[in-house]
Length: 463
Image (cartoon, rainbow, N blue to C red):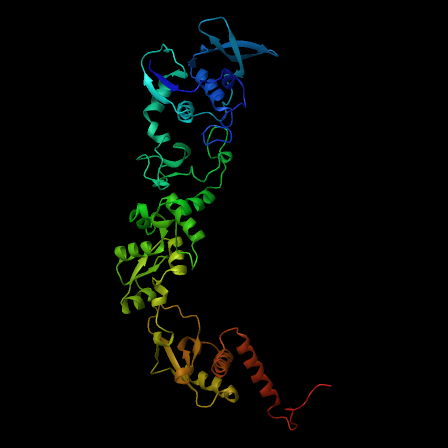
């Protein structure tokens, strides 16, 4: 049997072991502060068939259990027995203390090591059970199979402090670490592990020193502020463009999106986040003439067609990364590579008789509102998959209305209404649903209503 031995220069008061809620570490930088860890460790040890040995200049004791029958139920009570006298200290806890939450054997080892760190001591595995004399305190526990396995996997639940918050951690088990100890296990779902000691409050941890029922997104908002992106570059920025992002990378860039502003594109000093570094990685990965998009594109997508025609290469990025780039970067989104609507249309040379007659009739119906010198031209999409929502559009620069051939498949009133709207756009210069356009349409209606009246209403006023 091997033993885990913790040696500290300070003297542990026996009452700190046997009194629930007592702690001398509150309001300090020490890890423990709830006054329950050593008690629950003691109970868990006995559930595994072990015990605690403790020695200082004032005592030398070992924990043991005894049966107490209370209201016809047997309970295994824990007490501390002196090794040199008959003195006994009742711990006033049973072996079931903390049994609902302290369910991982490594919790025991963590508590022992945390105690060594808090008290400026040392720890190690020994073969010798007998405790030597000391002027400080020695705590020792046996290592049954469960604890031997947990000790062999120590790097999973104990990591060195990460100077830049982000670290690669254990090869196949990642998570959040507080003072170097695991408080949230993500297993293989994450790419990195994170040291949250600098900003996480101890009160956010549960009794078993874990982050339970916490707002993980809020934690990553804080990580995004504190993390050393540039210290982890270029890898951490390359992750932003990984279409199969791990969960933590997605949360990390959600945090970046949460904090970035038009006048705040870098933070955290030389090692912090910098949008320029992210843009550099984008161009290194996709090329100088890449334009990003976030959705899957068909090969015949007109956006791809026009982008390539303009010399841009489509580059798919994750949704949130696309949000960061579109809002705060000069890198072109793919849709920005589209030419104007007029450049995506071409004149139809031959229109069939029925369509041509419908257009003539519609133009005749609305001739009274047609601006002088404006011509109407039938056009079609250059790329048939192009998503052009309108069926007619005004082209003031060329003094014309372009009517898509699709509109002429509808009935004459629909064609006429479309012409009226585009005539109004030309006359007012107002956009769709704009107040300028509304006023222009009202003016047209008013003019039509009063044009043939024998009495002039130009100067009429209401009483």
